[in-house]
Length: 207
Image (tube, rainbow, N blue to C red; front, side, top):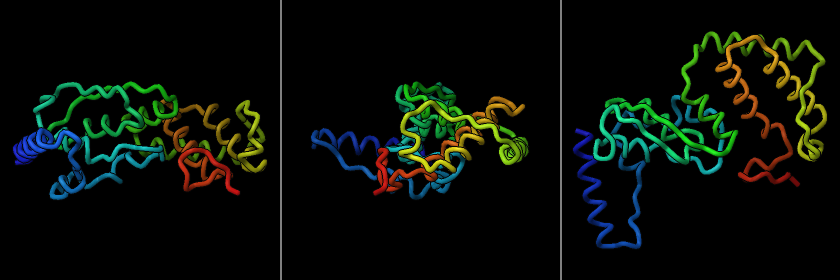
């Protein structure tokens, strides 16, 4: 049984730490290797949006597989929620699901976290995406942020296309949850359309 296995591993880890308080190296991916349901770091909404220093999903999957720290059905609070890796794993856990709440100061991370943990109708989302795309292709309206360095980061044509998409999403007659989903989708492509170096997490312009 997974719960008993996790409890045993935690006991072993605790004992090892008492012997070596400087730290114990743990491979959570390997610990979860025999759990077919845990091999899903690319499933659900985990890869909806890139974000630097995202937590490996195997870490919460491991600790959520025991009732040592939280019983079945107990609420989980992540005070540094990031983009909701812990929250999502709490909700989708196969045998110990829990409600989850998060605190996050970064507004983009908060939006991504909200979208990743909100159930939406995929057919409705698809229809909304087609509606927004059609509108963007047939309007000259553009919604650009008031930012001095847009020309440094984006070609002018890209600015116009991204701005038109942003305007179309903002003005579309759609559910707010779907709007947030489309905004996250838009955000996920912005960096790819820019001059930013794709190999460096912080914004650095390609030479």
